[in-house]
Length: 224
Image (tube, rainbow, N blue to C red; front, side, top):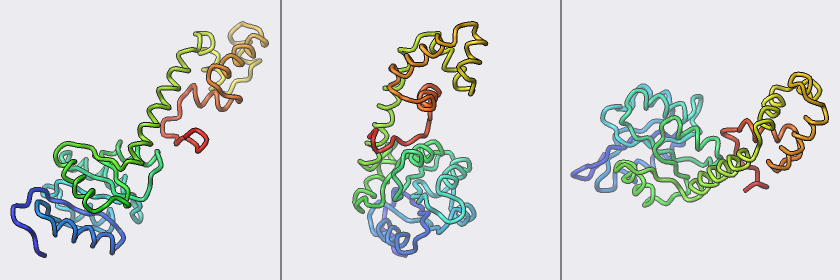
């Protein structure tokens, strides 16, 4: 395997598709300033053979056989907190994005990323950055905008409305809530109607979801 001189960044690759894995290896080994120190077709192989103290940046596919790329990232970070996992995947749903970042990934790229951009992203991660493909960055921004909007909506609820929604979230009926709080049944219904209006929902389930929060939910196409 031929390497360029003055290697700056040691890269490992975890990718189950042979052609993709080899293309990435050739790209990295054929570029000055980079060296591929290992390739792995599964999380299990990476767990056993990845040079944990020598590798610096690790390209990780999420759709690995048996154990997922997210599990792999989590384990690698536990073994070496200084390791810099960089996701390279076809998946762009919000749930996977945040699970990968929570597991310890330092960036998230789609496999449609151009080779030059992959190299630039590896260098960016190595230098302390957190690169993301534009569609991924948009989804992250949309997610936080949605959270901020929900926070603004929730801040409009009165203390009594919040108390009632906490009861609603437990599954109690309006009659049970009224009896437990010592207020009228119609009063409970009126408070819940106000909550629906403030949270811009039309059902009990939607109101509970917004009130309690649904941390990893991906916005529906209607919300995007």
